[in-house]
Image 1 (spheres, rainbow, N blue to C red):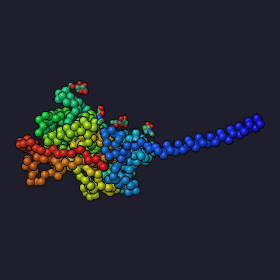
Image 2: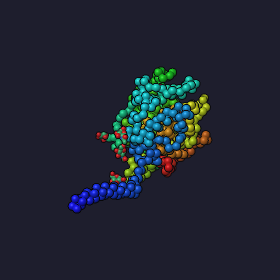
Image 3: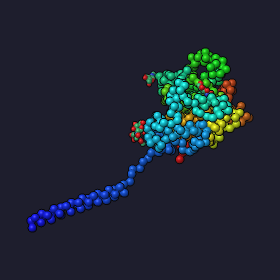
Image 4: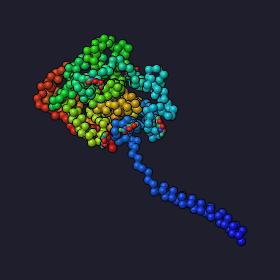
Length: 460
Ligand SMILES: *[C@@H]1O[C@H](CO)[C@@H](O)[C@H](O)[C@H]1NC(C)=O
Ligand SMILES: *[C@@H]1O[C@H](CO)[C@@H](O)[C@H](O)[C@H]1NC(C)=O
Ligand SMILES: *[C@@H]1O[C@H](CO)[C@@H](O)[C@H](O)[C@H]1NC(C)=O
Ligand SMILES: *[C@@H]1O[C@H](CO)[C@@H](O)[C@H](O)[C@H]1NC(C)=O
Ligand SMILES: *[C@@H]1O[C@H](CO)[C@@H](O)[C@H](O)[C@H]1NC(C)=O
């Protein structure tokens, strides 16, 4: 009896224990399933394709939002192909890591050599993009393709102290407006006319604003001497000019039409290093006329509005880019023209861009453009390149009717009153600049040009 009882108990134990364990396991599984089903993951608010964002560069859009430039590789347009490779390299979804985006690509891609070239393009180990039938293209296109991997050129003439030198005498630190004017070595007359009229450095009064604003002017030059073509040697004259005015920036590259993009790029580098506090930047050509006072009034208004806005949002970056905006432009396919872009080089329409002689953008946007330009292949037409960089940031330029790329009607050109609503007009000779400047000084009454809502429209 006792033995059997013991036997029973052991049987019971052997039976019951596994049953209980299985039961527990079942309960555990059911609870787990229940928890998994009822769990909702936290909402992730990362925008890979940025609709607009703060000034933080790590939040930049990393992939074009719309295919302005055709992204299909098989199309065979050189720029599109090269851009495509970069877009893939910098795409955080494909790369799976958004930090260090501009660093070395993880996969060994055909352009790795070129990436080295970006920082070391003078070492001649760089591969020039290959393109069949290169020799059938016009000379300037060929020259561009041969050097388009290279975007670092040393400064020959620098102004390292420009934005620091006057913090005592003016009692202001940051220039309200930095005017960066693309010029060429030989254009002494244009530069001097600009210095004497609309491009004066120092405290400049607005037209309705009594208080002066700090304005600096620099001229952006490449090289034009016997080593870059049949040019007379003007180096000594240029040095003299720079000694007197201290407003020349010159880089060591051939100053040609298709190299103008380099001036934007290198100017942004310079700005970041030597004048990052500039509030606004005007970038223009040396054959335009600007009503600087009216422009300052306009910018002042934008700045006040921005500060008001900032007080509520803590948003420090300001996105302003205004000019004469051109939408849906097609590349010029006429081989005899200056703007000719062959279909083998670029396919697609151009993103919205501001053309014609001059644009104004905020200093903080300039720094972001510099950053994003490292992911946009050089394009031979500078205005279009700016449009591409803006597009890459998810922004589009704002149109302002005061920027007259195509001048006033012929009958109004000589009439000072016709300039009331003008901020910039293209084109004026040095002599015309001086005359117009004098006429406009005597123009009676305050001129109203300010318009609202200049902040960049963001993509939806
Ligand atoms: C900007 O990004 C950096 C890292 O990329 C981060 O440390 C910093 O907090 C960010 N700033 C803002 C304002 O989001
Ligand atoms: C992303 O890249 C950075 C630097 O390249 C690295 O430190 C980090 O660990 C990476 N993160 C992931 C999730 O791979
Ligand atoms: C100019 O700025 C520098 C650096 O910010 C500062 O050390 C110096 O005291 C300033 N000079 C004057 C005269 O305010
Ligand atoms: C641009 O400048 C570089 C450096 O001087 C030169 O090699 C290249 O040919 C120039 N490009 C054009 C299109 O002139
Ligand atoms: C703005 O910044 C201040 C100080 O840094 C902080 O106290 C405040 O909460 C911020 N406001 C917003 C709306 O982020």
